[in-house]
Image 1 (cartoon, rainbow, N blue to C red):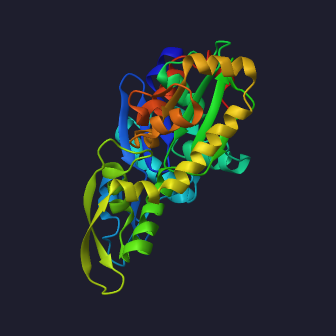
Image 2 (tube, rainbow, N blue to C red):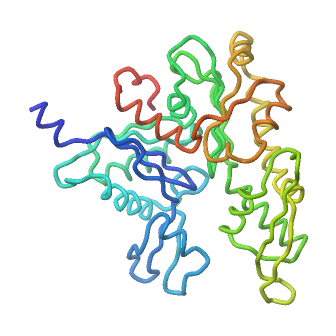
Length: 339
């Protein structure tokens, strides 16, 4: 019976992110990395596209189609759409979905409420999951990076996602003095860029354009050679399309507020760290994970503010989902880290 059960089950790790959803499957690794966006018909609520295909439609849909981001600030904002998005994506990875009842581990923000936990569990259970376990994103990120979270040595992780930033000091399979979780992430950077251009240039741009600007010329500290980029948008005065040239200096000014908020949260977390653990962090440094860690110069900014070594993890975007995979490969050893 145990052998038959193993054939009919599958282990799946999910990073249910505000900006991207990543799925890990046992024996295959990370198989899905798609934007957390769904396109559907407004009247029938029929899903037309999920992930990358839905993202291509953002800002370009006719009246009868709407694009929805069902996750906001790291948690489920639209329960039904999240469930449908999971169902569509899991169909791609589960071959015999009528026989297979997967065991699922989901990475969630450490500041998640009980109501939000229940929503995540229900969404996973309704796609025919056998067992659903939740793990905090910084803990999963630390495991994904390869840190021995069971050791009596402190390690500091900063996980910057699309909707939240999580700062945690991990030791002995737990988070020391609780994680610092703020609902500021990559989305706030995008919003700040949109508002800056609207205020200073009377130019209206969409979310996709703001994200592209952030990736191309965004930075958290002064660059050796500043960069310029041309941006297309709609002139709010003349109401016609217009192109402007903007520099990385201006974009750094635009995103200064959310960058400062994350920096302040890091300093607050360090203030609350016990002295013995602080000495471990001094030796080992701080590790950055999550898509937000890819912002140019963010590690340098944290290094300047904290006077500590700061390292960007290899492939920071997949650290959390790789961590859920490692938990599933040896779930008995990691039982303590699960909610």
